[in-house]
Length: 162
Ligand code: PNS
Image 1: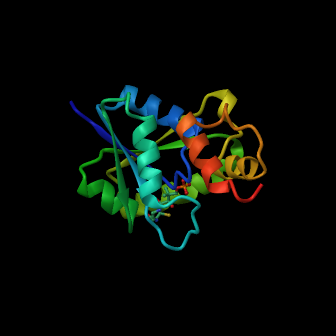
Image 2: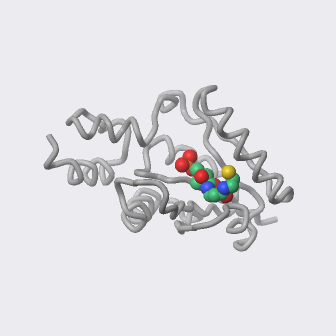
């Protein structure tokens, strides 16, 4: 039976940690939609269009991965596209409380779409978009943390700040 899963997030920008989760999800589900939250209350470094383009570039080798955007409630989006699952990445224990909160809320909204957690590779367990941006901003080496396209895009964003 074909099962579709949604990997939601801010992806500002996508890291090797995200890519690891997407790759693992795509090996289990027949189709995976990576969806970028278009939420005006956050102050992202990359526009939604830039984030989508970067994700498309770095997932181009995964034939069952599609990249979209969404606004509003995740569960409404997931139901509209016929998803049977949400996939979230888990790094350290510190992620647990936040993930439990949003998963519990999502369950109240829709109990039929299951949330699955995938642990990242150990080497990415400390990695976040925020930490990558912090290092990139001050010219640190991020080559092992993000794909080359993302490294280039970050350097371009911060070129006047160093
Ligand atoms: O990458 P992030 O910022 O941790 O992703 C958070 C995300 C996008 C999964 C979460 O903010 C979300 O689902 N937002 C959509 C609004 C929503 O559905 N809220 C209800 C559950 S808290």
